[in-house]
Image (tube, rainbow, N blue to C red; front, side, top):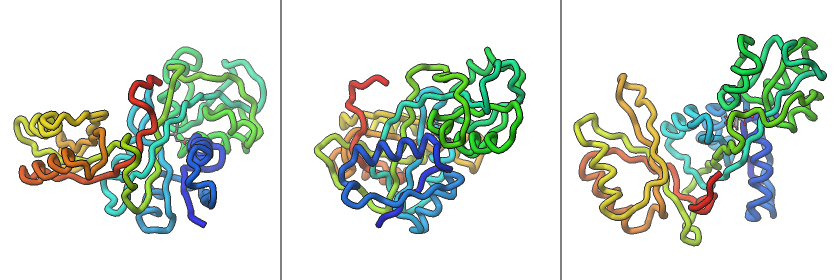
Length: 287
Ligand SMILES: O=C(O)C(=O)C[C@]1(C(=O)O)C=C[C@@H](O)C=C1
């Protein structure tokens, strides 16, 4: 039986998404993986890198709050991991308490930083000046408040309420109704080419010289390769130095992408392949 890790404990958005992902992907149905919760995304990815687990299912970005920095940084540092699938899941945030109570009675609010960020307007409007406590996941927040009978609240998934015996005081409190998160499944080998609807994720370290990013993007543009995402993260070496996460349409062994990789190598630009995998959503989908 294979093993698949996720950000736990039970009742996290990651756990909810992993179940839906597995239902959608029949290739896992003959022999469903054993699901293993991890307390942090770093530990999860490092366990996968060290081959203690076969797969890691991790959040990468959210439409409201943006990139999950830790996922991007560690994916950039690991050497033997590839993104094999992506999965997009709508996220509805709930306000969870022990029992029904007026909002004004809440004294503290616990959640994961992504969830707090996704509900910033709600918190500013309805719970200004309330102490916010950042937890390792939304489910960990629900678990923490469930064991202490204070006027504390957690923000997290609806399912966490039933698992941790909490009351749902408010639903869909995220600032934007459509609030999808993109998760990726990371494993040890490059995925095979699919039916032609693949994308390739690359990490590119641009030189800090005039026009460097422009010339990198030019290599894709010259070959009519469509870029679907470009994000930067600090290089962590020097203030103002960045690395770029670029997603492009196509499988990595497609000749135009191979030509770009050769051209960049000739310009001494370092490129790391993060994976080539089937796109989760058709191009025209607006979430
Ligand atoms: O805290 C959780 O429940 C998670 O699974 C993590 C996470 C994230 O890091 O993006 C997953 C989906 C939501 O966007 C909020 C939190």
